[in-house]
Length: 107
Length: 121
Image 1 (cartoon, rainbow over the protein chains, first blue to last red):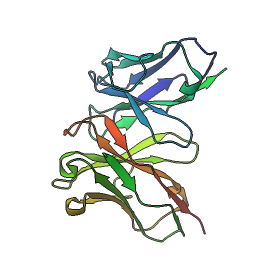
Image 2: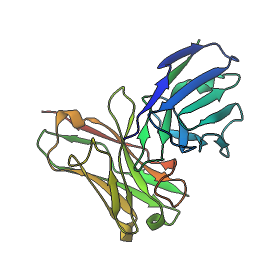
Image 3: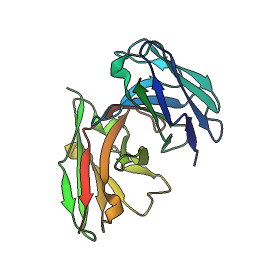
Image 4: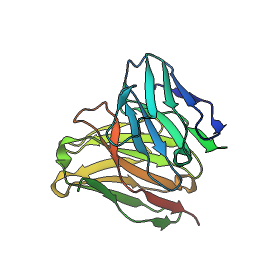
């Protein structure tokens, strides 16, 4: 089973600052890495698919990059509504696995 | 409207059985893999397994193989997650989610609202 390790586990960041979350895979997964946002008491929401592909309706301040075993989610100019937990998910090996999550707090 | 609607909250005792459901609408249910995801209180997302409703092909995550049963009835656009003997450690929120495209290895773009399962004596 492919293990995904996110870092950091927690970040407290002022508004308008940049946030970077990394996700490392235990083996190469190509670009089969996706990012989700989960706000308190809500279902997760897909932010980025296949490492760097944006989705309709997701603010442009969210972007992703990476390939193989090292991936990054970047939030440019953090807004109050971005307070949430963020998860990476690999679909290279079925059925897939999630990272442990990164909580982002607005300072 | 494209959506997944899950069954309501459940309160059960240890040792009891349970089957929760996830009904899709607004799209061709048979043609997209559906996954089940566990979220224990205050914890992260865990992928339990996925099913292709068209032919009920299933992939279990190793941690959940033998612990739960995933099934689907494509005639009523519904996927299921069931337990034969619940434990207190099964207390969690359970989400169903649909794959973005019609492939086995994919992102989840559509999520149900979640079903809270509480197991307590």
